[in-house]
Image: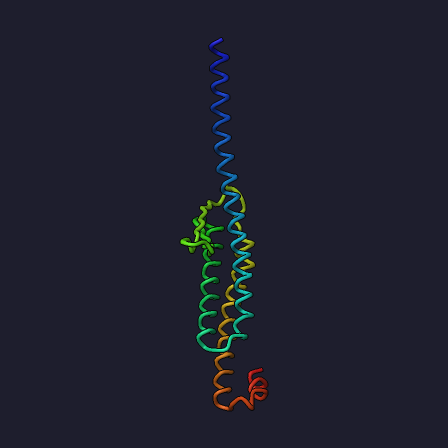
Length: 166
């Protein structure tokens, strides 16, 4: 009888340990999914801002949008580094509730040992993020040049300005 109780206690302790380990793995996998969602949202926001920049009318708007794009690119670089090395990722959610402007979500991620690191994301996205930064600078330069030509040549020469910029 005492041997049966000891075996039952041992089985219960092993079950609790496996259950805790499984819970930690599930939480880590949820964090990885959260980071993936942040990557997708970040890329979408960069795309929206990139296409919005030429439609704005003044240098201050161009500067603000350019700053937003580069801030998002930096965050995406950080998120990719967390996937590879581990760490924390934050998401700031803007709320429309009286007295509460923002909500900050944060997850911690630890890469799983023995599993292939998430280098595919790094290999594919890092060069594209660098390319986006370069394209943003080029677009910003073109928009500045366009503004300069508009002021120099006046509104009547807008078509010639556009041809010159192409």
